[in-house]
Amino acid sequence: MSRVLNNVGPIKSETKEKVLRAAKKIGYVPSALAQQFARKKSGNIGVVLPHVPKVHLFSAYYFSEILSGIGEVAQSNDYNLLLIYRDLSGKRDYSTLFRAQKIDACIMLGSQNIPEERAALAELQKQNYPFCLVNQRFDEEDYCTVDADHIEGSRLVVEHLIHQGYRKIAMLNGPLSYSNSEDRYKGYIAALEQHKLHSTLEYADELYYEGNYSRKSGYETASLLAEKIKQSDIDAVFAANDRMAIGLMNGLKEFNLEAGTDYGLVGYDNSDGSRIVSPPLTTVEVPFYEMGRQAAKLVLQTLENDKSTLSQKSVLQINLIPRESS
Image 1 (tube, rainbow, N blue to C red):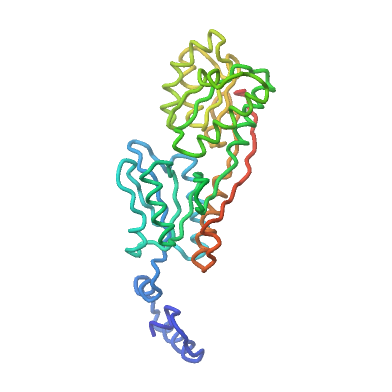
Image 2 (image 1 turned 120 degrees about the vertical axis):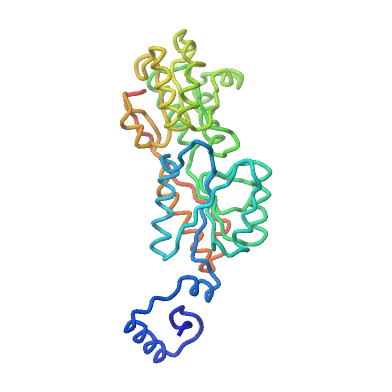
């Protein structure tokens, strides 16, 4: 009976029909654990998330959108999600999750280009465990990756500011241990160089600031920028995500500086918050939901023995959303 209900091994059609009729008659519900044991699968897709103290990840547009996309594909394919929090300062041993049969595949959010992470990912690849990185690339490695074209997105927002007449454009970026932060910086520099707004990188460095993608880091940066804006040393700011842009906007209001009037401001992500702040925030729309869907599809294809997805790299396009802040 268990072989029929768990769909394991060759079974005569007559026998299968008899067993299914009997199970339906008595209202039998098969044990999920028994099914997993029989199939030698957990039925789970693991999603690795960074554990950041005092940060509510599920309230962040970035994580909620990607998780929603992953969840839709997983649910439609009868898989569950197992959320795994990674301590940013702790050991990273993702392969244990596979060896313990807790997960069948893994999707990584918030991966960083640091030695501990690289070693853990290399071990997964060595063991041929299916995993996919979202919004983080290691160009020299053949990892399954879903990303967005952040170089182009960053270039578009700086181009937009230049076309609006701004010339002294500062950047508030996230940590460069993330490839998407590095890409945003590359796009920023490329646009400045194309329009000959500086002759050396040192000029850009004077206008470059780094936060951690939190609203608080944007708010705290306001004190560093306020005097420069008042003295016209800075006339616009490109913030690498909406949370930092909104924090910066709120912080600069305390110095009587209004976005769209005293300086131009662009964010990145097209989060819900970008539409409801005053003034509404110019931003870049990143298809995070679709990135989550794509990552889930790729790891599920791997589970169906399509090993070509183990090294597939997918890059999604983005769009500029002009609003009043610039």
